[in-house]
Length: 170
Image (cartoon, rainbow, N blue to C red):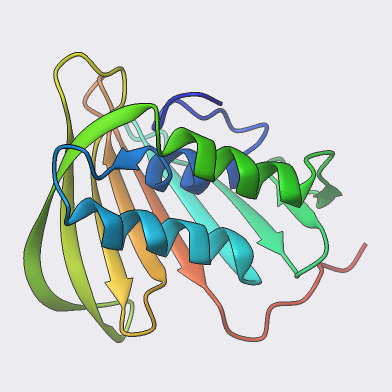
C-alpha cells in the first residue's frame, strides 16, 4: 500500500506499516521518533488488535500476529497465514518514509493500555492522501496504540502487544 490510513481488512497487518512508515522528517524532525517506532514494530514480534468504527454502530474487528517468522491474519473469525512476506513489509515501510510529508506534534506523556507512553499527533500535509492519526509510543520506542481519523468521520483503533507473541493455533 502506498498511503497510510487506506488499508483494507484483507491485509490488516499492513495498516500499521503504512500509517507509521510514511511520516517523513523533511517537514518536522520530530517525525523521526514516530517513524523509527513504526519500523521497530514491524521488526518485532507483535499481536495487533484492530477496531474499525464507522460511528453507525457497526464496529468491525480483526487481528494479526507477527511471530518473528510469519504474519497471520484473522479478519473473518479464522486465522490464516498471510501471503505477505515480512521482509517486503519492512522494505516498504522504509521506502514510504521518502514519499509523504507530515507534521508530528508531541502531545505529552500519558498511559495507554496500562503502560507509560508518549502521545503523538500526526498531521499529513494538505497535498497528501494520508489521514490524520494519533500514535502512542512506549518507553522502549515501540508503538502500543494508534487511532486514525478516517475521511468519512470513522476511526480505526490499533492496539499492539509485544508480550508472549506466538503463532495462532490452526
